[in-house]
Image (cartoon, rainbow, N blue to C red):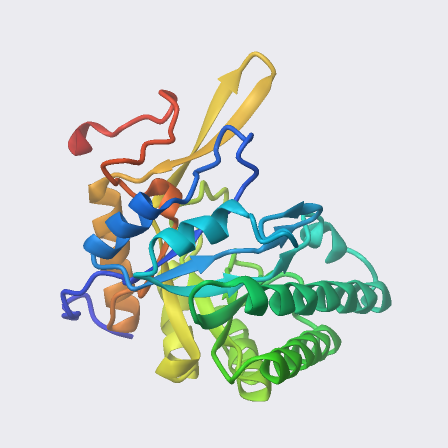
Length: 305
């Protein structure tokens, strides 16, 4: 394992996730040219749009007047990785039988390909990559049958995407919760990468409130040992999950993490993998001058005031 004295390049992540939401939602952030320009000034090179459609909510409508497209027309300084179709019920689908899950994945695949065809026509900037919103965990893909199903799903999706557009990278996110031993989990990721060419975006989970202790360092180290560098990128979570008691019950907010916490997380990446993470999750929690979408319930730690 990389030692605690490991020295990583002093480089900041250059890619950042953005989750589009209906602008009527309280936690929605509107992407516009000014915000994109700020990202470019901060040194970011890529914006990963997590989805183009989520359930019935379309962010790239057929008339070409979607607000994301208008933002990209206004400022073309960033390279864009386009997310495709996201099913809001995806994690419920994972609880279904294998045969039913296979059918549901095929439906997601068809919708994603339809979204890709629309994006190819509408995107005002060249497409730098595709992102598949089906997040992969260490609980639901442990059997050989499910791993083969997932590999087939990704392979078919990637082949169809490459038929639509010149060969560009295709990404998917991964997270772990202590449900599978780190080595087995890393071997699964290695196998599916070799079979499909999918590039894994590894979430560290360090922003979440965990109820069980996870050896994050061991998972990250196992991934480093199993996968070649070009097969994965690290995702630094810059949020801290906070729960608040309200009149209607407990609500969860994903608040900006303190500078102290973020530095500790970067150190974890360095010690476990020998390198810094390449991607930030997410734009919503970035501290930019024109951007402060958080309620007063987000508690700012004393050491970060």
